Image (cartoon, rainbow, N blue to C red):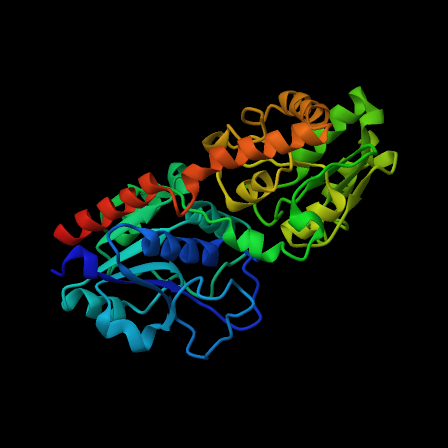
Length: 374
């Protein structure tokens, strides 16, 4: 076994020219993990292992020298630890790493149980074929998907599983926000509050219905506080009989206060149209969207218990409590001084997830040390 200080670690991702990092969180997971390990005291030689055989231009994705990218095929002989995050690899390639004394980790950051369940029940396949790579030594699972998917991963991948800390880096968010007014930071609005909901609406875990209901109850109680509510990712819902029928019963829709929009990147859209963000999740209580919104100082009304200290939290699916939280969020951030203090408090809390956090770095150093001696 190599000395821990010289471990060469490849973290997989499929990187291609022109792609958006904001399409989903998978590539961000890989990039942030590389950044965390690159900053760790153990001084690992860590890089993003691109599984795309076509060379890609990464200049627009992140700042210069932000992350080291190498092609997986040219780096495979050197790798001591292969961490599968943003892209899976053939079993024979993983077996090769293991045969030469290396370790392979499956880093699981998606609610695979829920995705698989939806694919089977609703006849909506998420992949061309089901591929389970059992050539792994360990399974690392982020906490927000552990409740539903821990056993799913452990049984299928036939390896020891453990929950690992969530990792984030606001550097990419700030890099993408440099051209926005106020660099994407919330500075308030003199008129009535503009609410935003940006749930993906492609599965049962994150759906816009309850955020709309939260806004509806708040609007009934105090309509003068509301200007608009914009609900994104609803292209497919605008013509759905069930959804349209439900919406037709709401005052906020009848009064023309609620609009249903297409898909947009988070911060540019909120920066232009929002004063408060409303969210609801079902067994996915921590994700980058919440952290991005909070970092930029936007009030977030949410039910994610793994980050309940940020924004304005309501428990489970208690829509009445959510409505109260929304009204509180609107009334709380009504002066520049309050907004500035709120943003600073949010960022202080979010430090625990950031790649520069020493405790977070040490947690992953310990994971790697235990992996290599297993």
